[in-house]
Image (cartoon, rainbow, N blue to C red; front, side, top):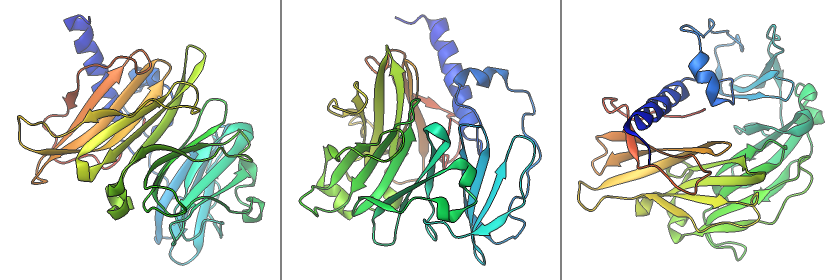
Length: 328
């Protein structure tokens, strides 16, 4: 049992983490750094594109701690700039394999950058490049089909560099039922496991990217790699967490994290995000009243890798509206 003082301290720490997560970017993977941040940690914003016609910036930090930013330019395809720890390069105009789509960039082992994107036909595509060649579009590998047709996905690289990928099939094509699927690659991205069905639901056939959400992450617990996959099923008004205790080989049946409470006004929980470090796992999700007027942010945490969980609680009770994005 937690004492009252320990619970209060833990709750305050979690709220501090969440508050920092609402910032645009946190260039850190360690929760401990949050208590050491200076009162004014942010430098003045830098104009990277210098064009006034850019949208959809994507940032990734390679294993050498260089910061790469790719964006779309209305008049010049993709823009690109990199920060080497001292200064930003001048922006250049390039045409990447994922143009005109916005990719999800993931930093892996051996300074590799992995890119995932969905094309206009709902095909999930993949390519990779060595980070030092990010400014050479021809250095990217040929686009590889990962799954089709999909409506949403989430990707994560673990400490060894293996890629964990979760995605939603939205129709019963290729003899595969609609639902949540999982695949993983080796550290080089050259070999992928078959798709594993984690959760099946016909409701996904009518959903879109705007009303679905996935969050996949991993951490090492007692020398075993655990993978955590959060997702929602909005027609059922429920959010779930799936856990693999053996690095994604097998999965425990998804846990129902939240649903409408029968003794209160009907609510719709959605957008479950999972953050993990060693044995500590933090869940964040939103819930709105049926009217859509009131939005609340909930959290729940585990200190033993997901074996036991705290009671759910709310954060920022006086906050009007829901945060649009969360990163730790």
